[in-house]
Structures are given as C-alpha cells and as structure tokens.
Image (cartoon, rainbow, N blue to C red; front, top):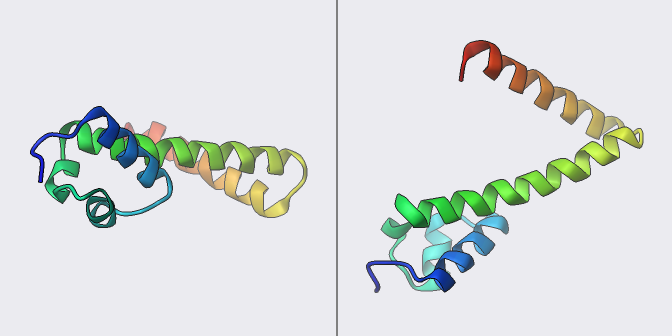
Length: 91
C-alpha cells in the first residue's frame, strides 16, 4: 500500500466520505492504509467530503423549512440553537 495519497485518491476519499462511509470502509474500498485518513491531506479530504454533503442536506432542509415542513423547521431551529450555544461558549 502507498504511503502518500495521490490527487485521484484524495478525490475518491472525499467522494466516499460524502456517501457517509467511515474511514475503515473507505480504506478497504480504495486499497489504502486507514492511517492515511487519520491526519493531513487524507483527513482533510475525508472531512471535506462529509462537510460538503452535510451542507447540501442542510440547504435542502432549510428550503423545506421555508416551504412549511414542520420536521425541517424543527431541525433548523435546533441548528440555530446549537450554533448560538457555540458562539456564546466560544467553541
């Protein structure tokens, strides 16, 4: 197994992380060491994939909240409260 990830592998890590696979499964699918996803560019690609997909889901949820979906409205209110707590606590 390689000791560094190629740009193509980093893109694949990001893609699979966005499909909500964990690092163990991604490492098996891509035939790479899971340790490469623990820090540095591998971890950044993993987190970028997760956060970008989460952002897409949040955008859809916010749209649904504005359209009157009660479950989406509740979730958006929870996000607002959580982010307010983080701001207030300096997290």
